[in-house]
Structures are given as structure tokens and as C-alpha cells.
Length: 274
Ligand code: DGL
Image (tube, rainbow, N blue to C red; front, side):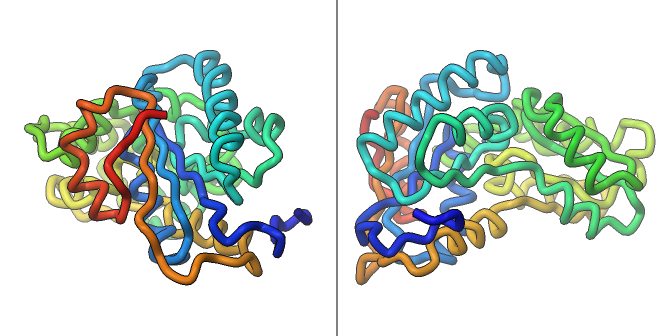
């Protein structure tokens, strides 16, 4: 494997592992499927530790590198995508240190948001754990120094996305409340761009759009992640045609039964235990 990750000796069937605490990474799977349609995928949900946004840094630092290490041993992936802002902003450096597999992380799309805002006010909607990270301070200082940047952690919106994908009753106030918590902050009236800094949120972007009190541009990193996966696998062989991906969960299978339809819409098989 050279520094850019290209390796013609990679087996055509070697998968891309896409990892999240729950269904959020499906927003990234969608972008990867569009960019690399033949890529074999293994989608992994760490439902046993869901929600990551309510976990401490030390729990995630102990858990995520170990879990990804076991996945790498069992599935020999060509690439692992941490399709979770919370896990990425906390564990990315530790995972890269521990594993000899190229790792693509998901970090809040603050740079494109700073490029798109007209009024200079950006909201960052993530989990409670993500919005308190130094990583976010650093991205803000680097790319949005001239903007007002508001942050809000919205656990109810994560649960909302999980429920919606299962077709279960969901708290319909969650999208409006999450946006209101940004807009009510000083300067929030002028907010015109919102970073969806949790991979669950693009899955419910329509509800956010519908409930926004004024027009807002929503920005997320999925397309950029897919482009990065394409760059890191350039020149590698792929299977001749697209195939249904595997889905694995660390949680119970019963709670995944209602997800079968949603998983199928991303060309993923019903969940099995990891
Ligand atoms: N989808 C995840 C993220 O991007 C985490 C959601 C959660 O488990 O709290 O942060």
C-alpha cells in the first residue's frame, strides 16, 4: 500500500466497511453507492453503545479502535469509513494509530458552510459530544474565523432519525426544536447555513427543511467522504457488478427487524450480529 492508499494487489471482493453507532452512516452509504457502485460494503452499527453522543470521550476511545480492529481482522477491508462525527472527532487519531487500514473520518463540514453563508452566521447541529470537541474549535478557527458560529447538541434528533427509518412513531417536534435552539442564540436570527454535523441528520433533512422558520442551507460531508473513498481506492480492482452489502450490529436483532426495508433501500441485507 503506498501513501495514497492505492494498491493493485487488493482483492476485488475486499469491502469498504462503513461504521456508525446506528443508522446515521446510511447517509454516507448513499453517497458511496452513487460514487463507487461496485464497491462491496459492510455496514456496521454499534447499537450496543448507542447513542454515541451521550457517551464520554474515554468510553469511545476505549471502544471504537478495538471494535474496528476486530472488524478489520474479520473482513479484511480495503478501507474503513467512520461515518460518525462523534466517533471521528474523538477517536480518529487513535484509530489511525492502531490500525493498518486506510481510515476515512467524518468531520463537521464547517469549511463548505463558511463558503456558502451569505450573512456570516453558521449553525452546527451535532451530538452533545461532537459540539463540545476541541476538533470543532480548531475547524472553526481555521475555516470560519470571520463567521458567527453557533452550536447545539440534539440527541432527540438522532432518536428521531432512528425512529423514522424504522417507520416507528417519532417525536415530530424534534426537528423544529433543534433549529430553534440555534436560532435563539445571540445572532441566530441571521443564521442562513446549518452544518449537519451528525450523519443521522441528512436522513431527516426534509423534516428540517420543512420546519425551518426561514430558508436555510444545510451542508453535510457525505459527498466529500465518497470522493475521498474514490481517491483512496483509485486503480484498485472491483467486482464486475454491484452486490447487496452486509449489515452487522453489536445490539439485538429484534430491534433491527423494522429496519429491513430501510436497509434494502440502500442495497444492504438485514442485520446480523457482530
Ligand atoms: N451518527 C453519529 C454522529 O455522526 C452519532 C449519533 C449518536 O449515536 O449519538 O455523530
